[in-house]
Amino acid sequence: MDPHRSERLIEAMRDELGELIAYEMADPRVSGVSVTEVLLSPDKRKAAVRLHLTGTPQQRQDALEAVTHARGFLKRELAARLQLFRMPELYFESGAELGPEARVESLLRRMRRGRPRDGRPDEQKSTAK
View 1 (cartoon, rainbow, N blue to C red):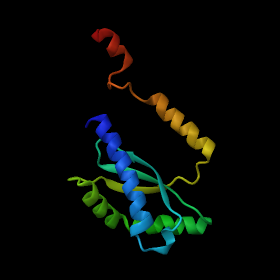
View 2 (view 1 turned 30 degrees about the vertical axis):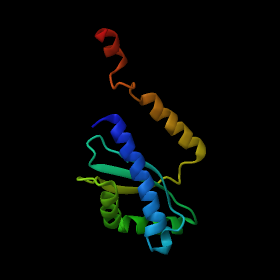
View 3 (view 1 turned 45 degrees about the vertical axis):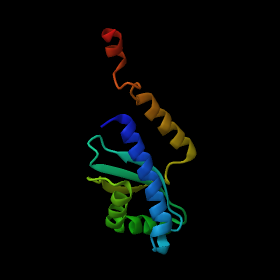
């Protein structure tokens, strides 16, 4: 899959999941939940959804359980909104343990590991010319 298409899919999933959780779910336990990041596996079969949970540790645990319990509903609605034939399995995890400093460090680490724009490693560029 084209890397740009993959990035668009990740962003669309993050936006739509945020809307679904905030406005479509009737469960009061998910009132302080927001989607911070979606990580898609290379084969596009699994999606790890990181959530920002607020409240006490018990409230955060209850909110994570509520979102996990609604996985089927969220997957069905997301597939319909994005018009995907094969929807990845959704796995929810809390991103609350990451503070702002750890999150910035994590993002910088991911940027350093990134590939060049054209998808080829640097050593292949020099030999291809």
